[in-house]
Length: 378
Image (cartoon, rainbow, N blue to C red):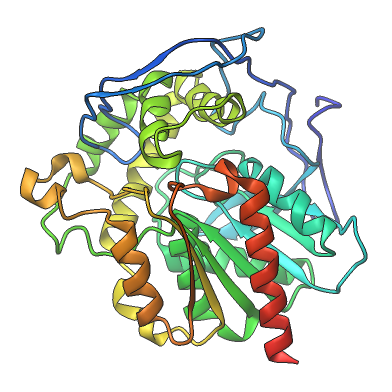
């Protein structure tokens, strides 16, 4: 086990090996010529956009990681929550970070997106810990450092139940729940299932705010999505992130997360990673939460970058359907109206990942929203 990427075991928990690697950054001018496969399976080509980048060169431009992200260092020690699910032994890897500022007695649960990992919450963990929160950041089963069990039937409700089991094992009854992208979709499902366990729901660029198939995105068999996932490269990841996550920008600090994801597709477990990405794509397409938004009964804040254009399966849809998908300015406002009492925070200059693209501004807004919620509940 690497001393720089420890997976420590708590009571009743088992350690998993990890290794240290911080991928190198490189200098290049980025031309967004197209996004072909992977990520959200079948995204459209994005031609005609050129983005200049001054990315700093580093030591390794071709990072390779294992199917459980072996070799990639997380910003804090990680632990393994071992349990039985669907007649299999599985592990849910997580970070449990104590407050570094004056403790406020609250816990923040961070739920990652489909193309993200718990590690991508690095700056959010720092901000929340400094504000007095204990922070729990898991990798969901099927993602990143957690198990990818054969034949697993993925369901948002199942992932929510796994997450609730993790918190119960840690003795945590209630928490602030913060979800990004797919994690926002999962956070909504979690809040619908366990409203008494949610102090505040914070949604950052959540997907699931529209029903893609009902809007005209055709069904794609899992085998087709898998084949598309296998074609994922660093270039396709980077180009997509520039266009969708970062509103046409690319900075050196974004490089690590693109290399993290690309390294799993370049590694010895690429087929395992691609298959589970295909299965979870199918889960998201088939399990919309948009119809249940009015049923949410927890305090909620939405953080929306209006340049976000995320939409699953867009590339497989006819052009007239593509044009209607992923309009996050409209989606954010419609969602804020649908969720009782929800507050909407819009970012006119940001995309899908405000917490990564402009972390200082976002975390000020997040902590302000959580403080307002505390005042209201007092």
